[in-house]
Amino acid sequence: MDFIGAYSFDHLKFLLQGFGITLLVASIAIVLSFIIGGAIGTARYARIPVLSQVLAVGVETIRNLPLLLIIFFTYFALPEVGLKLPVTTAAIVALTIFESAMLSEIIRSGLNSIEKGQIEAARSSGLGYVQTIRYIVMPQALRRMVPPIVSQFISLLKDTSLAVVISLPELTHNAQIIYGQKDGYVIPMLVFLAFMYFAVNYLLSILAGKLELKKA
Image (cartoon, rainbow, N blue to C red; front, top):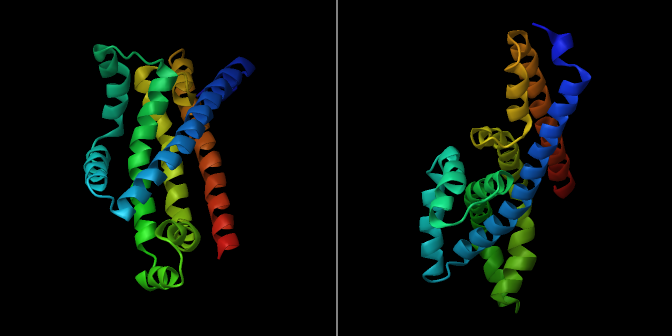
């Protein structure tokens, strides 16, 4: 195990460049999936005729597919129908599709957890359906959604490593390149990967705890 050679300046710089790609892809996918998943979850909660049923089929289909298969589809299958995506874009699209489906269920469940009596009281007081969701249901549901949503974001960050199969130059990919140079680099690289993923995900967990206490 050559920790000194593995953690040379050039290697660390290369690893941090990969980590930057990891954070970039994860951040964009988190924002997009939260927006899309929120829209889908709210639409399903509202039980909009036809649309709700179509979305339900799409969500259940995606949730029961391996993320790796979706990554393969966006990078290898779409070019067959004339849509070739750059590797970074393909990774973001795949993660967004998968996480949107997962988040939509979290959001729908959170909305459904609000007692029907509060909704009826709001409607009887003169609030419209949209106003009831916006001012009564959503604020309370969001407080309950924080832990599972952050947990899903943590999973998303870790799942970026799956994009190594399409050679996305993220943290795991760059670590593989380095430990491919010398046998003694394998354990140091895996230790570095474990530390980086743990550090970021632990910070997200702490943030989730503070948000939960703040909203309590």
